[in-house]
Image (cartoon, rainbow, N blue to C red; front, side, top):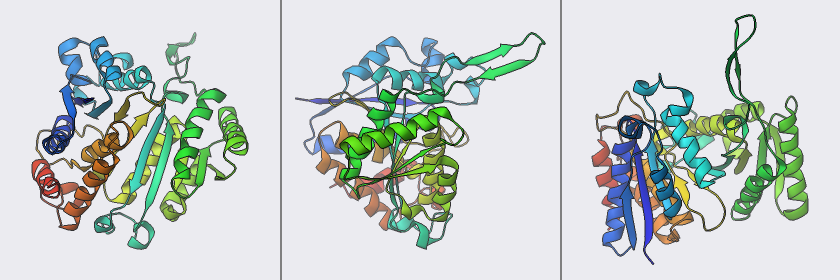
Amino acid sequence: MTKTLLLLAGDGIGPEVTAAARRVAGRLISQGLDLAVTEARFGGAAIDVDGVPLTADTLEAAKAADAVLMGAVGGPQWAGQPYDKRPEAGLLALRAGMQVYANLRPAICFAALADASTLKRIHVEGLDILFVRELTGGVYFGEPRGIETLANGEKRGVNTHVYTSSEIERVARTAFELARGRKREVVSAEKSNVMEAGLLWRQTVQALRDAEYPDIKLTHMLADNMAMQLVKYPKQFDVILTDNLFGDMLSDEAAMLTGSLGMLPSAAIGAAGSPGLYEPIHGSAPDIAGRGVANPCAAILSLAMALRHSLGQPDLAARVEAAVEAALNDGARTPDLGGTLTTAAMADAILAHLK
C-alpha cells in the first residue's frame, strides 16, 4: 500500500529546506519507494491566504497521512497578531490535533563537525543524545492563561504549568522503550525542588520505572543542573526525558554542541499506528530567508526519521543519514557550518551519495 507524506513548508526558510527534503524523497521514489507526497499551506503562509495558521482541511490531511514533514513557522510580519492567531498557534494546534505527545530530538555530533562546536572536540566528538520531550501538555497548553487587567490597572500575565500522571506516564514509557534499544539509561529532568508539578513528574517517572522497566537505569536531575552539565560534560547523557518547557530549552542548548541548529531533526510521535510529525528544530530564520543559504540537513534528517518511525523504511532512513554524513566528510558546508554552499548545492552533495 502506498504511504503518504504531507509537506507543510511554512514560513521563512521552511520552503527552502523542505524543497531539499522533497528532492531526497523524490530520489528514493525513483529508486522504488512507494510514497505519495502532497503539500498544504501552514503557519504565516496560511494566515495570509486563509486567515488562520492551520485550516480544518489541513489538519484533517495531516491526520490522514502516514507522516507529516514541516519546515518552520513564524516571522516578524505576523508578530502583531493575537497569540491564538499567530503562526506558532497553528503549530501547537497541529501537535494537539495529531495527538503527538512524545518529541524525539537527537543531538548527534557528526565526526566531521566536531570542531564546529563551541565546545572542545574532546567534549563533543561521538556525542549521541536523544531527548524525549513531552509535547502536548505543560505550560504551553495549561489553563488558565492570558493577560488580564487588575483592579488597580496593573496588568498580569498568567500561564499554567500542569500535568496529569497519565500524561507523564505515556511519554516516560516512550523514553524507557527507546532506552532499551540504546544504553538502557534515562536521565529525567524537572524542578521538583520548587514545583509541585515537577515533584509529580519525578514520582510518576520513578514509579513507572520500578513497575515496568527495572532493567533501565533511571537518574533524576534538576533542569538547571542539567543545563550546566550539558556544557560541562555532555557525553554523560544518553536518553534525556523532559517536560515541554524544559525540553524546548535544553534540546536547543544541546543543538549547539553539534555545530549548528541546522543539523538537528526531530520527530513527534503518538500512539502506535498514528501519523508522526517531523521537523527541523531550527526556526524560520527570517534574516536569511529567500537567500538560498539555509542548511537543509536538519530537514533531510527529519525525513530520515519519518522513514524510520512512520513509513516503515528503517534501511532507507539509514541510507539518508549515511548520505548526509558522507557529504559532510567530503567537506560540504553551508554558511552556518563555516562553508559557502547554497541550500540547493548542499542537497546536491547529499544526493550524490544516494545513488
